[in-house]
Amino acid sequence: MRLHVGCAMWTHAAWQEWQPSSGARLAAYADRCNAVEGNTTFYAIPARRTVESWAAQTAPEFRFVVKLHRSITHERRLAGVDEEMRAFLSAIEPLGPRAHALWVQLPASFGPNDLGPLALFLRRLPQQYRSAVEVRHRAFFENEQAARQLESVLARVGAEWIPFDTTTLFDGLPVTAAEQEAWSKKPRVPRRTRALTEFPIVRYHGRDSTERTVEGWQPWIGTVVEWLREGRSPTVFIHTPDNAEAVPLARRFHEAVRAELPELAPLPEPAPTDPMTLF
Image 1 (cartoon, rainbow, N blue to C red):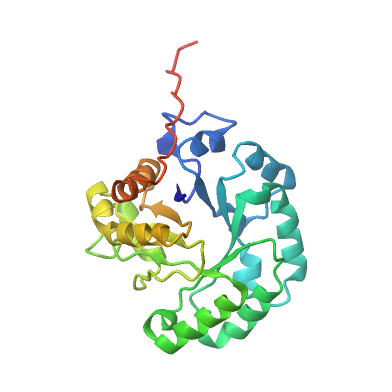
Image 2: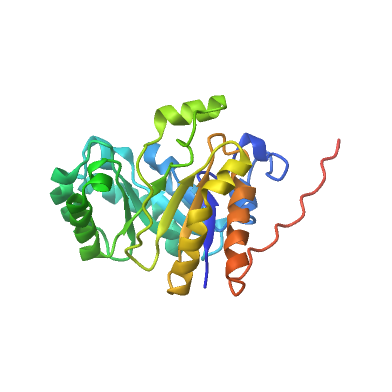
């Protein structure tokens, strides 16, 4: 029984208290969380030696949910991307078992009429990679037929549907500048809690207020506990607008689930951070 939790990144200016100034920042993060969103690969395919360093800093059971490059999902919209996919898969190969899922995040304009290209793309992915799809077109959340069609496409290849739960973010007007920015960028779609596979993945977006964030994730506690009791192995990512407290919040979510399910193993305690010295 394993619950993996993590954040949208492994380095942040607000985490300087426990992260080294350079070098093994991912290792320091992996000392606290056991999963991470691979958002950087959306903007640039990393050099293979960079990915080798990621693997060296993490245990084999650590989970990367690796977002496909935007040229594949947003520019070419999954069509004619063989060359791009070969380059992408070659780059992430050193992750080995750490590559928990290929994250196919689709633009908001990708709707029910585009399911044919999605089905073809998913069928052609190498079988050693698990795939997970995030959609943002409102029809998939508001039209039951569209939702069932998407689920059917995903079920044929054992792919998961990643929900991005922003309901807490949009529950009340933004209070901080970071919340205002998140309002302008994040999708406003209903919460979805249905898992399709043994490995559900959740992206939860709270507020800059810890209390509001914790209050908003309460429905997910019961859902994740149920998944674990069913024998599933979920991964939950915690976001806030500024992400300054994302790491302790991710660990707090894990503890909240464990409070309902004591047989769940706790996360390891982070290694002590050496105090700063002048010399």
